[in-house]
Image (cartoon, rainbow, N blue to C red):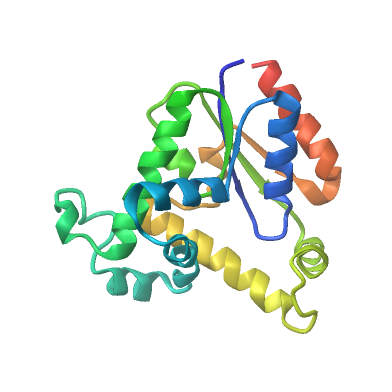
Length: 203
């Protein structure tokens, strides 16, 4: 099994925990914030700059205007002509390609499925869950204020969707882009890991 596994997920669905546990069971590297740390070291940008990019993308139109371009117009623009956020995305993309070249791994988020779309050994997974489950989990795991948790969950999902669409031109939640889609609230975090592992091993 020499697969690169990418995981996109709704906020609060447990996708990061699922990815980490899957990597442990498969005995392969796990990449999430590690991508940011590595890209920051290679480019000189601060880790904070990488961490705030996705959070800016709450409104897709305003995000595109603020960045000064979109996925349909930035193909032939030189690096020096790109916005800071696009340069950060390119730096992050280079790191994702490098870790994929290094061997099997699990990569969470960061448009990894789109960035690695030309590779034959990539398996794209999407993790979703019922809204109430995600709200409760965000309160317990991320310590969100109960009174504002629903709003924050919706905002995070919108940001992820707009960020993905801006850089890929695709819908983040289009399940036809994924080999496997699972609801973690129905099967549980650990059983979701087992399902993905079994799927990967039997491909």
